Length: 219
Image 1 (tube, rainbow, N blue to C red):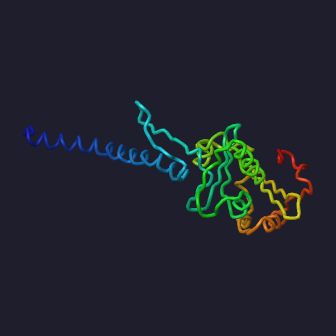
Image 2 (image 1 turned 90 degrees about the horizontal axis):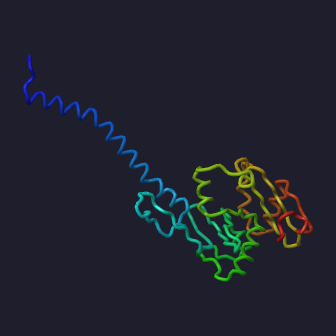
């Protein structure tokens, strides 16, 4: 029996709804996930993003990094940044009490980099002596944290330095930061540099009476 016009329209509308509803749901969830990608990156970099604008003629946001910051406090601690005149950025994260004391930084208030190039380079040398990693840019560092690329062998290594009050330097070299001792977090429980040195010694670190003997440490 031929279908009436109203019945045909109802069935046709139902078929269209069945076909397009799954597509609409897929597009919705894709849009929701995509819209969270860049805010997640902003959260990871904490306050390092000063602006979050869109490129002219493009829907992709452009990240503008704050290159004036010295310290940045997040939910799980503090990060320290140094900006050498040769380019790139030194990043020490997490930076604990011993690091901040050695660098002469406030433990509770964020601070900014030095406007004097020579002073900033001297600060970067001190960061290097704490084992801070050098990166081509903060964006490069964040990309690694987000898993957008793998760490190089150098980036995967971990070097911890301790400067005892009696002189010399303790050095602990670990090839893979992903395979640190399970209790390695106690390195951050030290209240002063001498305590850190004892922890480094406990992990089998090496003591050098003359820091000049440590390759690449003293510039």
